[in-house]
Length: 462
Ligand code: FAD
Image (cartoon, rainbow, N blue to C red; front, side, top):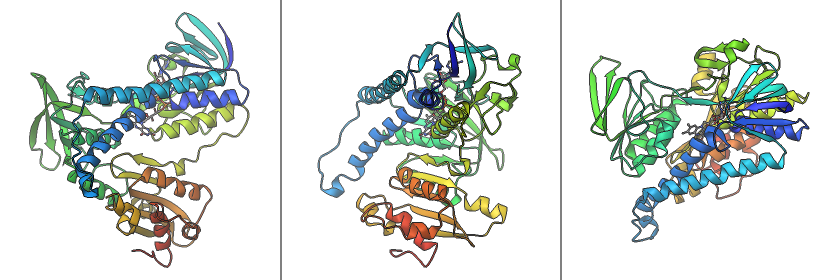
């Protein structure tokens, strides 16, 4: 048995980041992780492996679509799927080992195994019971199931199975047109699969800016993805190694069935908190096992805190990381804070899609007067040079004060461009502040400045 100031259960982006910050703030810290490797969903079966496959297949797409246009002739590589998966695994391995190094460097103890909380101030891992002044639940999430669709991780897969398919399917049905469904759908479409995305709502990417949604769907459809919207999946069955999915159209109830080599169930994730012993402790839970917390990440039981995918809010790695740092500050007697109004969301398709802050739809609903500055990448020389001029930057600012309220980008490196707007929003900047900032030419970020100019007297290149 050992005694710590803080024991964190789960070493995903929430847990390991929190552990490092706790240690940096002088707390004797341990992190419990049941997987063989650190980094949680994000590094092992989420953000990082998916981005590796997106990168590899984007290169393939570039070779096929754009190389000859640039005078690069004769490049028609074939895909060695085993090697591509090995590359992805290498990327994951390098990163998870990196986290192990960081924990050692910061003198954080890794308690290997699955943890439970037998009583406040106690964490059990295997036969050992450890003591801690504070416990942080950072146990993350797992794929949500869908009634009538039984996942076998071979033919009917979650994102985890989709990142390690035995072979590239010739056809794939993706259930759910959210971020994970579109990213992995893109991967397999670029690898030659016929991809059909079936979505319950009447639009893809629920909750995102409507114009961005429309443009994204149009571009992905051009890349070969077929969308079936307003379709309620009734069930899926497997026969002779192939799966048939049946859905009913919401508007008239008409049933349709489609058979494919594989089905990806991408209908969301749910908190992974079962088995920790929370009910017995009296930790208040919300529906689906989500842990209820207050503004300081405190659960209903003193000394037990929770962060990341296990608590309400966006299920994003960087949100978990920010909460991890903030709870560490709270535990060290400082003022941990997360600004939930400025958390960017990114979809790593080509082109990328990124957004932060308010959408036009939410501002209209609230009745808040706003102005829109929009700039198409068609007016950006650099975007045209890389064949990615189809998207735009849309900046939203308060009509009276000019304060930036939100930004929505579809275009090259949108996931990086968005951070200039995040910083501006954190500083309470106006659109004019961005417009008056000199931006290097030729860069994609000039499109952000042009959108800011369009909030005032007008963009130059539109
Ligand atoms: P997790 O990363 O889920 O980590 C929790 C850890 O706790 C796990 O390692 C688990 O093994 C461990 N654990 C659980 N219970 C116990 C226990 N009792 N004892 C010991 N250990 C335990 N987010 C982004 O921001 N960007 C992306 O590009 C992105 N892409 C994604 C792609 C996919 C395919 C998926 C599935 C997710 C993606 N996400 C992305 C979401 C992101 O992975 C999660 O939001 C993030 O990992 C949440 O971090 P966390 O620390 O809360 O939990």
